[in-house]
Amino acid sequence: MNPNLSWWEREGLNRHADFGIVGGGITGLSAAYFLKTRVPTSRVVVLEKGARPEGATVRSAGFACFGSISELVSDVRSMGETEAYTLAGERFKGLSLLREIHGDEALEFQACGGIEVFFKEDKENGVELLAQLETVNRNLKDISGIPGTVFREMNTSELSRLNFKQLELGIINGLEGALHPQKLWNSLLGKCLALGIEYRAGIEVHHIDSGILAGNDFSLPCGQILIANNAFAQRWFPDEIKPARAQVWMSEPLSHPFPPGTFHHHEGFNYFRGHAGRLLLGGGRHIHPKAETTFSTENTEEIEQYLIGDILPRLFNGQPPKMVLSWAGTMGIGNTKQPKYGEWKPGVWTAVRMGGMGIALGTKAGQQGALHMLG
Ligand SMILES: Cc1cc2nc3c(=O)[nH]c(=O)nc-3n(C[C@H](O)[C@H](O)[C@H](O)COP(=O)(O)OP(=O)(O)OC[C@H]3O[C@@H](n4cnc5c(N)ncnc54)[C@H](O)[C@@H]3O)c2cc1C
Image 1 (cartoon, rainbow, N blue to C red):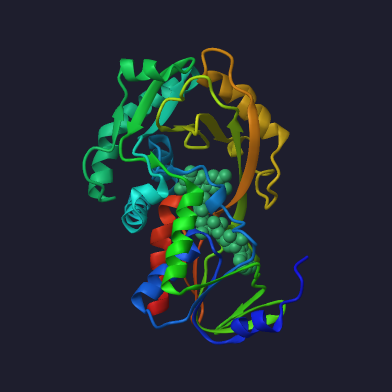
Image 2: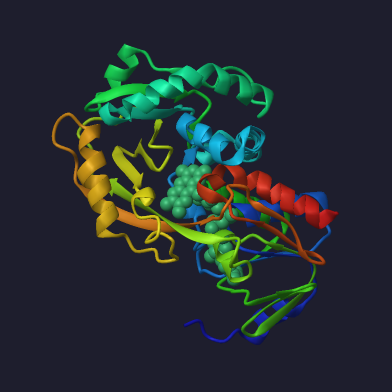
């Protein structure tokens, strides 16, 4: 349990801030960055409940992606064409903005391409998607505003270089890449601190009203407020936001380099990539959607068995590596994949429910939140 706040700590938390932000992940810190850049004389305070950020940002898989083709086509079915492609465009623009602000070196960004793989049992689905390739690419250009041809089928020699077992098809998106989530967060926090933004870790907001952010031992008067705590906003919006656990495993060092790329399988529910000479493998949430609707960050045997028993052996022709490390994080989802933006109470705004591609969306979401607060 945290000790009581000292007088000195309370003083800063009880003094008027022009802008108060709940949550120190990519969305909250990006919002703070845009606010302070636009109004340098303002007092911007970010409150983060964890000693280190406890949300999805630094627990993510580091895919700089805006949607595999099967996920996009599935989104069109559930959300309609305009909404699905507009959201893909927002993710693309979010990634571009992220790279523009931080630079690729700070993010450890690699333009490795995103590859959706189709094994023997997925082949039929892959073939159906290939038939839609031209339409999808056209819509990505016309509706999402993404230049060039996004998706193309991989040729036989590209496929054989991957050397996965029973791999039948691959569809590559050359505009996707990989980044380092902790380096992203470090760069963002560094920029915020350099601008004079106050980042207060270990401070949990329990109560929000127009002009007030309050918790144990403090009550911070704020001109404008942004709720940017993703899944954790469920406490204020129980019908609109649900937690979704995402579980990840990391292997021992591999004997051969893993092929470059960020890999998606089964509408992006499964994902894997090489990093630092190891394999990162995550996903499986679709096999137990109810059990994965939780704030728990434990890894479970069911998902471990599925990912390590069923998926891992397909990625190696010889003996698969041992998985030696695991973690889980909490995504914020809902009945729609759209983030929840807007005004909740006078002067209290939201930029929450970032779903499974919040690394792509977060910078834009923060910018959107800041624009709302600035009127
Ligand atoms: C395992 C995993 C893998 C993922 N992989 C990818 C990926 O490869 N690519 C991608 O684009 N996306 C990925 N995502 C999703 C992405 O990480 C999130 O959508 C994104 O990080 C959300 O950022 P955020 O800032 O909105 O929220 P978060 O990062 O969740 O931050 C919210 C912050 O608010 C704080 N907070 C909560 N409640 C309070 C309170 N009451 N008071 C003060 N602070 C509070 C939390 O501690 C947290 O730090 C992944 C998610 C997970 C869990």
